[in-house]
Image 1: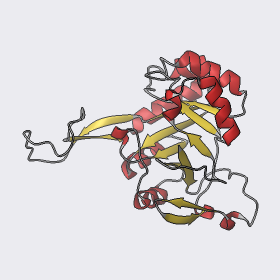
Image 2 (image 1 turned 30 degrees about the vertical axis):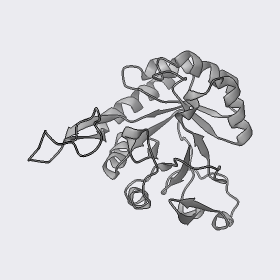
Image 3 (image 1 turned 45 degrees about the horizontal axis):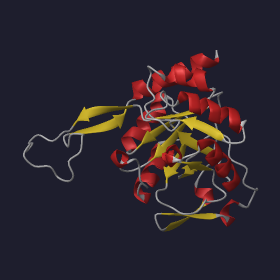
Image 4 (image 1 turned 90 degrees about the horizontal axis):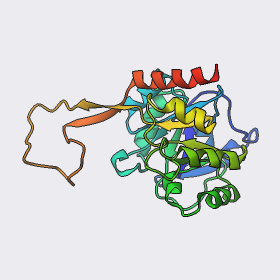
Length: 245
């Protein structure tokens, strides 16, 4: 699951006036007042959340028109909690809301809105699990419809949104691209979606020793990195806006 904190932006969440400093949260062992974050929602009829793991990707996501950022570390491992330093720098450079991946953590962090991560896609009975999340107080759930991608899981995502009836946000995520976004949004009725919009970029390293791997053997090259692409974010944004016309 993940917690939200954001730099200056749009409409704030409903925290009692003058009371924000009374609430505190722990991030990576550091106590932070809720007043350090802005809690915001979608200004349009849909909301695009872009998953990033670097300051550059966060800046590119905002430039491309993203409504919100999910800030992570270790995306190749499914996403882990970023360092406090990365969060602080990202907040200096972007104005849109930032949701921080918290993994693993045990409790729900009131009064901040909480999203249940794609662990939801491993449950035996997703319809019953959705009701459990409502009982626990989650504001949204990120899901690929318990399948390999949001497109493959589209029928279940539609059923979940129909069952939720606005009580919880069901946010499709997983393999969303400009080739399938329209079908996913129109087929599910979702008002928010989650994507990474990344492209591989060649490393700047000049000398490369192909005989050595610094760590576990992974599918991605050690001489490339993935960064959120401004053009991809803009394209996805435009597709979603067109659906509302």
